[in-house]
Length: 236
Image (cartoon, one colour):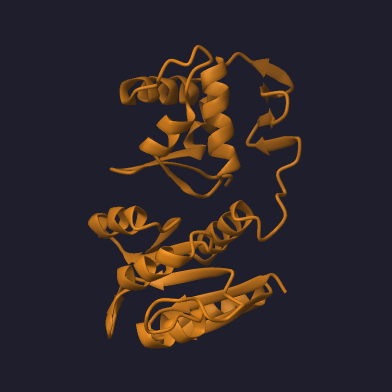
Protein backbone atom coordinates (compact mmCIF):
# COMPACT_ATOMS: atom_id res chain seq x y z
CA UNK A 1 0.00 0.00 0.00
CA UNK A 2 1.45 3.34 -1.09
CA UNK A 3 -0.35 5.25 1.67
CA UNK A 4 -3.73 6.61 2.69
CA UNK A 5 -5.10 9.80 1.15
CA UNK A 6 -8.07 11.77 2.40
CA UNK A 7 -9.80 13.37 -0.59
CA UNK A 8 -12.16 16.19 0.41
CA UNK A 9 -14.12 17.08 -2.73
CA UNK A 10 -17.86 17.57 -3.33
CA UNK A 11 -17.71 17.35 -7.15
CA UNK A 12 -18.77 13.72 -7.60
CA UNK A 13 -17.39 13.21 -11.12
CA UNK A 14 -14.03 14.79 -10.30
CA UNK A 15 -13.77 12.87 -7.04
CA UNK A 16 -14.53 9.52 -8.66
CA UNK A 17 -11.96 10.06 -11.40
CA UNK A 18 -9.35 11.14 -8.87
CA UNK A 19 -10.11 8.23 -6.58
CA UNK A 20 -9.78 5.75 -9.45
CA UNK A 21 -6.41 7.21 -10.48
CA UNK A 22 -5.08 7.15 -6.91
CA UNK A 23 -6.20 3.59 -6.25
CA UNK A 24 -4.55 2.50 -9.51
CA UNK A 25 -1.28 3.78 -8.03
CA UNK A 26 -1.77 1.74 -4.86
CA UNK A 27 -3.16 4.43 -2.56
CA UNK A 28 -6.03 3.84 -0.19
CA UNK A 29 -8.54 6.67 -0.62
CA UNK A 30 -10.96 8.08 1.94
CA UNK A 31 -13.50 10.34 0.24
CA UNK A 32 -15.35 13.08 2.10
CA UNK A 33 -17.86 15.42 0.43
CA UNK A 34 -17.96 18.05 3.20
CA UNK A 35 -16.11 19.28 6.27
CA UNK A 36 -18.15 17.18 8.69
CA UNK A 37 -17.20 13.93 6.94
CA UNK A 38 -13.61 15.09 6.55
CA UNK A 39 -13.28 15.72 10.28
CA UNK A 40 -14.51 12.20 11.02
CA UNK A 41 -12.10 10.60 8.56
CA UNK A 42 -9.24 12.71 9.88
CA UNK A 43 -10.09 11.82 13.47
CA UNK A 44 -10.81 15.40 14.56
CA UNK A 45 -13.36 15.92 17.31
CA UNK A 46 -15.54 18.99 17.68
CA UNK A 47 -12.84 20.81 19.64
CA UNK A 48 -10.17 20.02 17.05
CA UNK A 49 -8.25 17.25 18.82
CA UNK A 50 -6.75 14.35 16.90
CA UNK A 51 -8.36 11.27 18.42
CA UNK A 52 -7.46 8.34 16.18
CA UNK A 53 -3.95 6.95 16.19
CA UNK A 54 -4.18 6.16 12.50
CA UNK A 55 -4.37 9.26 10.33
CA UNK A 56 -4.36 9.82 6.57
CA UNK A 57 -0.87 10.20 5.16
CA UNK A 58 -1.90 13.16 3.02
CA UNK A 59 -4.98 15.35 2.49
CA UNK A 60 -6.30 16.63 -0.85
CA UNK A 61 -8.54 19.51 0.16
CA UNK A 62 -11.03 21.45 -1.93
CA UNK A 63 -11.42 25.13 -1.05
CA UNK A 64 -15.18 25.53 -1.52
CA UNK A 65 -17.32 22.91 0.25
CA UNK A 66 -21.08 22.71 0.99
CA UNK A 67 -20.67 23.37 4.72
CA UNK A 68 -17.78 25.78 4.72
CA UNK A 69 -14.25 26.43 3.50
CA UNK A 70 -11.34 24.05 3.23
CA UNK A 71 -9.31 26.80 4.89
CA UNK A 72 -11.22 26.08 8.11
CA UNK A 73 -10.17 22.42 8.10
CA UNK A 74 -6.58 23.31 7.25
CA UNK A 75 -6.49 25.70 10.18
CA UNK A 76 -7.89 23.06 12.56
CA UNK A 77 -5.41 20.44 11.42
CA UNK A 78 -2.42 22.75 11.64
CA UNK A 79 -3.37 23.76 15.18
CA UNK A 80 -2.59 20.22 16.33
CA UNK A 81 -0.68 18.50 13.53
CA UNK A 82 2.14 20.21 11.66
CA UNK A 83 3.37 17.18 9.76
CA UNK A 84 0.59 15.75 7.60
CA UNK A 85 0.92 17.12 4.03
CA UNK A 86 -2.04 19.17 2.79
CA UNK A 87 -2.56 19.92 -0.91
CA UNK A 88 -5.30 22.37 -1.83
CA UNK A 89 -7.45 21.79 -4.92
CA UNK A 90 -8.24 25.25 -6.28
CA UNK A 91 -9.93 26.63 -9.39
CA UNK A 92 -8.06 28.40 -12.18
CA UNK A 93 -7.28 32.03 -11.46
CA UNK A 94 -7.90 31.87 -7.70
CA UNK A 95 -4.47 33.22 -6.83
CA UNK A 96 -5.74 34.75 -3.59
CA UNK A 97 -6.90 31.31 -2.47
CA UNK A 98 -3.51 29.83 -3.27
CA UNK A 99 -1.65 32.39 -1.19
CA UNK A 100 -4.11 32.12 1.69
CA UNK A 101 -3.86 28.32 1.72
CA UNK A 102 -0.07 28.38 1.83
CA UNK A 103 -0.10 30.98 4.60
CA UNK A 104 -2.40 28.74 6.66
CA UNK A 105 0.13 25.93 6.44
CA UNK A 106 -0.77 24.01 3.29
CA UNK A 107 2.19 22.37 1.59
CA UNK A 108 1.13 22.71 -2.03
CA UNK A 109 -1.78 23.23 -4.38
CA UNK A 110 -3.10 21.83 -7.67
CA UNK A 111 -5.23 23.89 -10.03
CA UNK A 112 -8.45 22.34 -11.32
CA UNK A 113 -8.94 20.87 -13.82
CA UNK A 114 -5.68 19.06 -13.14
CA UNK A 115 -3.80 16.41 -15.04
CA UNK A 116 -3.55 13.08 -13.25
CA UNK A 117 0.20 12.84 -13.86
CA UNK A 118 0.76 16.24 -12.27
CA UNK A 119 -1.40 15.38 -9.26
CA UNK A 120 0.41 12.09 -8.70
CA UNK A 121 3.77 13.86 -8.94
CA UNK A 122 2.73 16.44 -6.34
CA UNK A 123 1.43 13.74 -4.00
CA UNK A 124 4.61 11.70 -4.32
CA UNK A 125 6.81 14.75 -3.72
CA UNK A 126 4.90 15.80 -0.62
CA UNK A 127 4.90 12.30 0.85
CA UNK A 128 8.60 11.98 0.16
CA UNK A 129 9.30 15.32 1.78
CA UNK A 130 7.30 14.32 4.85
CA UNK A 131 9.34 11.12 5.14
CA UNK A 132 6.30 8.91 4.60
CA UNK A 133 7.98 7.25 1.66
CA UNK A 134 11.71 6.77 1.41
CA UNK A 135 13.79 9.59 0.06
CA UNK A 136 14.52 8.26 -3.40
CA UNK A 137 16.95 11.03 -4.26
CA UNK A 138 20.25 9.18 -4.64
CA UNK A 139 23.71 10.68 -4.80
CA UNK A 140 22.93 11.87 -8.31
CA UNK A 141 19.85 13.40 -9.87
CA UNK A 142 19.38 13.58 -13.63
CA UNK A 143 17.13 15.96 -15.51
CA UNK A 144 17.28 16.68 -19.23
CA UNK A 145 20.93 16.56 -20.22
CA UNK A 146 22.10 17.57 -16.75
CA UNK A 147 23.14 15.50 -13.76
CA UNK A 148 23.38 17.03 -10.29
CA UNK A 149 25.72 15.32 -7.82
CA UNK A 150 23.98 15.87 -4.50
CA UNK A 151 26.81 15.16 -2.07
CA UNK A 152 29.54 16.73 -4.15
CA UNK A 153 27.42 19.78 -5.05
CA UNK A 154 28.42 19.63 -8.70
CA UNK A 155 26.35 20.03 -11.83
CA UNK A 156 27.29 18.15 -14.99
CA UNK A 157 26.12 18.77 -18.54
CA UNK A 158 26.80 15.85 -20.87
CA UNK A 159 29.45 14.75 -18.38
CA UNK A 160 31.19 18.15 -18.21
CA UNK A 161 31.19 20.31 -15.07
CA UNK A 162 29.01 23.42 -15.21
CA UNK A 163 30.56 26.33 -13.33
CA UNK A 164 28.10 27.47 -10.64
CA UNK A 165 28.74 29.64 -7.61
CA UNK A 166 28.18 28.10 -4.13
CA UNK A 167 24.96 30.10 -3.79
CA UNK A 168 23.68 28.90 -7.17
CA UNK A 169 24.51 25.31 -6.21
CA UNK A 170 22.64 25.61 -2.91
CA UNK A 171 19.68 27.15 -4.70
CA UNK A 172 19.57 24.34 -7.24
CA UNK A 173 19.87 21.73 -4.48
CA UNK A 174 16.93 23.25 -2.58
CA UNK A 175 14.79 23.21 -5.71
CA UNK A 176 15.69 19.63 -6.61
CA UNK A 177 15.19 18.30 -3.08
CA UNK A 178 11.68 19.79 -3.15
CA UNK A 179 10.84 18.64 -6.67
CA UNK A 180 7.20 19.31 -7.54
CA UNK A 181 6.63 21.57 -4.52
CA UNK A 182 6.15 25.32 -4.54
CA UNK A 183 8.87 27.08 -2.58
CA UNK A 184 8.00 30.65 -1.68
CA UNK A 185 10.58 33.36 -2.11
CA UNK A 186 10.71 33.77 1.67
CA UNK A 187 11.43 30.06 2.15
CA UNK A 188 14.32 30.26 -0.30
CA UNK A 189 15.63 33.47 1.25
CA UNK A 190 15.70 31.86 4.68
CA UNK A 191 17.77 28.97 3.36
CA UNK A 192 20.21 30.94 1.24
CA UNK A 193 22.69 32.66 3.52
CA UNK A 194 26.00 32.95 1.74
CA UNK A 195 29.13 31.39 3.19
CA UNK A 196 30.15 34.75 4.74
CA UNK A 197 26.88 34.87 6.72
CA UNK A 198 25.62 37.77 4.61
CA UNK A 199 21.86 37.76 4.21
CA UNK A 200 20.53 37.11 0.72
CA UNK A 201 17.87 39.73 -0.03
CA UNK A 202 15.01 39.52 -2.49
CA UNK A 203 16.88 41.25 -5.33
CA UNK A 204 19.88 38.98 -4.86
CA UNK A 205 17.64 35.93 -5.04
CA UNK A 206 16.30 37.17 -8.38
CA UNK A 207 19.87 37.54 -9.64
CA UNK A 208 20.80 34.02 -8.47
CA UNK A 209 17.71 32.60 -10.16
CA UNK A 210 18.40 34.36 -13.46
CA UNK A 211 22.04 33.25 -13.49
CA UNK A 212 21.09 29.68 -12.64
CA UNK A 213 18.51 29.57 -15.43
CA UNK A 214 21.02 31.01 -17.88
CA UNK A 215 23.52 28.30 -17.01
CA UNK A 216 20.90 25.54 -17.29
CA UNK A 217 20.26 26.58 -20.86
CA UNK A 218 17.76 24.24 -22.54
CA UNK A 219 16.77 22.77 -19.14
CA UNK A 220 16.02 26.15 -17.56
CA UNK A 221 12.30 25.54 -18.10
CA UNK A 222 12.47 22.96 -15.32
CA UNK A 223 12.35 25.88 -12.88
CA UNK A 224 8.84 27.28 -13.05
CA UNK A 225 7.90 30.69 -11.70
CA UNK A 226 4.66 30.57 -9.70
CA UNK A 227 3.45 34.13 -10.08
CA UNK A 228 3.18 36.02 -6.82
CA UNK A 229 4.42 33.07 -4.76
CA UNK A 230 7.79 31.58 -5.69
CA UNK A 231 9.26 28.73 -7.70
CA UNK A 232 8.78 25.03 -8.43
CA UNK A 233 11.24 22.53 -9.91
CA UNK A 234 9.69 19.94 -12.20
CA UNK A 235 11.48 16.91 -13.54
CA UNK A 236 9.39 16.47 -16.69
